[in-house]
Length: 190
Length: 117
Image 1: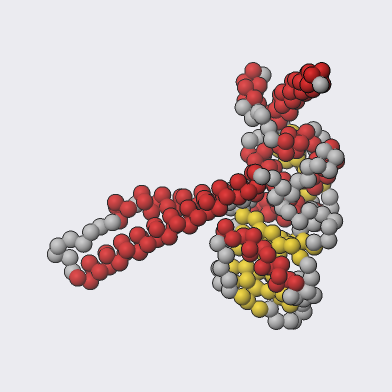
Image 2: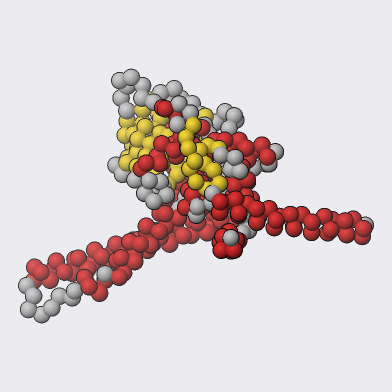
């Protein structure tokens, strides 16, 4: 809900997938101070000024196979019926908000399995990219050969270094998300 | 029939959420209708979140236990209506038999424990 003509503000903040609860809390705090989320992208969160209020934010993740474009209306409609407003979407992440007035549930996931299933397509994508990096390694990992020009050697070395860094970063992210899922399962099992 | 029985048996046991959603779809309903029905038959104990229900529906559609049977509402406010497939009906029946067996067992155990006291 954009207030007519009032300037929006853009804030950059990075939340990892395992910090989604912190992100949801932060969006609630922003709403409490009168800034309401209108869009999200890699470059940041865009907020529109409005009435400060108590809003509960929740995020969901869906990929092209769990949510084909043609089913978006059905998906958003189901949430709307349950009292949720679809406020933003970016690259599979869907942002919903609802009034915390006690008339309906402020959770979009009501069992452990579905709460964890949210991360499954994300985890699959991470593992997929990691596998590609590992599998293509022998092909692309060309060592500088004698007789190569020095410039070419630098290119090869830096390409290999970049791939190594990417692999480590991706592995750490995958591991971190895996740990989060495990912890969540333990916490929710109680 | 035998083949379908084996295929249906492969889905057992169902989680309580899945069973209640399938039972609710013995009559065609839209998503919100399922939420209301499940809350009603479980006397408010099982409240389905929108994300949980959407995930369950996607999964049940994928395994062909349910299907889209039509739409309801005004043109600008359409809701998809879901219903059980023959396979889905089979699964509900089989799970019902399993639960009925457990219910008999539960009664026996309860009366035996009662007798001990």
